[in-house]
Length: 519
Image (cartoon, rainbow, N blue to C red):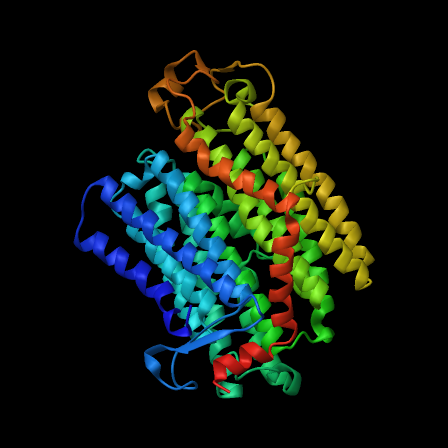
C-alpha cells in the first residue's frame, strides 16, 4: 500500500453512504454495500499492517499540497492495528444489526458508514484541528444511531440517555476545540509532528495540549468524568452499544497515546498523575458495576473500569508498558463487543430487565451461554484467554516501573470483575428454565418476542420459551469475537510482536515525525 491511498479510508465509506442515500434500494442492497465497504476497509488495514511491519510510517498530504500546508494523514503500526480492528468490529456489529432487523431502517447503513469514515479519519490524521473535525464526523451519525436504535415504544429513560450522550459530547468537543485554539495560540501550529517535544521545551505548550488531553480523557470516560458513558450506553440497542464500545472511547484512547508520545515525548514528570487517575478509574468503574442490577449497565461500568487498565499503559510509558497497553486495548475491543452482542442476542429474543427476569438461558441456548462465559472469563483475566495475557503483560510492566500499588489495584479489580461476571451468569444463564412472576417485569423491560400488552396483562411471562430461539445469524457475531479472544490467548505472541512494534514507534517518534513533516 502506498501513502497516496490513505485518504481512501475516509473517502470510500463517505461515497458508499452517499450512494445509499441517493440510490435507495432493498434491505439486501443496503446491507451488501455496508458490509462490503467495511470489509474492504478491514482488508486495507491488514495490507497496512504488512506495510508497516518493519517499523516504518506512511504519510500523505491531502490534495498533494506540501507538508505544513496540507491536511496530513499518517499511519504506522499502531494506526494500522486500530484501522483493522475497528473495521472488524464494525462488520461484526453490523452483521448483528442485520440479524436483529435493525438494519431495515433506511438510514442505518449510511449512518454507520459515515461513522466509520470519521473513525478512520481520526485515526489517520496528524493534525489536532482535523482530529476535532473527524471526531465531530464520528459524533453526528452517532446521534442518529442512538435515536434510531430505540424501538417505537421506547420509554422516556431512553430519550434521557440519548440526551445525556449528546450533552456530554458537545461539552467534550467544546473543551477539545478550546485546547486546540490554545495550542495554536502558543505554538503557532496544530500539526502533531511539528509539536514533537514542544511540551518539554515550553510549559505553556504543555498546559495547552493538556487541555486537549483532558477533553480526550472525558471522551474516554476516565474518572471522575465517566458517568455519562455508564448511563447513556445501556439505553441504545445492543448492536449500537457494541459498536460504540469498540469505536468511540477507543479513538480517544488512541489519540491520548499518540499525543502524549509525540508532544510530551513520554515526560516522566506527569506520569504519576496518570497512574493515580487510571487506578481510580479501575476502582470506581468496577464498584459501580457491583451496584447495578441489569446486564448492560454492569457491562457499561466494567467498560469504564477496563479503560483504566488500557490507559495505564501510557502512565507506564516505555517499551514494556506501551506494548502491554496496546495489547490490552486490542483485546478489550474484541471482548467487550462480544459481551454486548451475546447478551444482546438474549435481549433480542427473550426480553431484558433486571437480573433474574430471564434465567435458565444456558440450558435453552448453550451456544450463546458458552460464548458469554468465554468472553466474561477473558474480561476477568482468566487463562488461557487473551485477557490473561493482557493483564499479565500490564502487571509485568507495572512491576518493572516500580508501581506496586497499581499492581495491587489491578489484582483486586480483577477479582471483583470476575465476581460481577459470575453475577450475570447466575442471574441470566444459570438455573432451571423458569417463569417471571407478574409485576417483576414492566413494559420497558420487554423486547423481542413480547410486547407491552403481554407484559401488562399476562399472569406470568415465559422466561425461556419465546416463539423463536436465538438463531445462528444472531449468535454468530458474538461467537466469532469469543473465538478470536481464545485465538489471541493461545497465540498471543503474534499480536504481542505487532504491539511491540507499535510501542517502539511511540517511544521513538522520529519515523512518524519525519514522515509527517516530509523530512
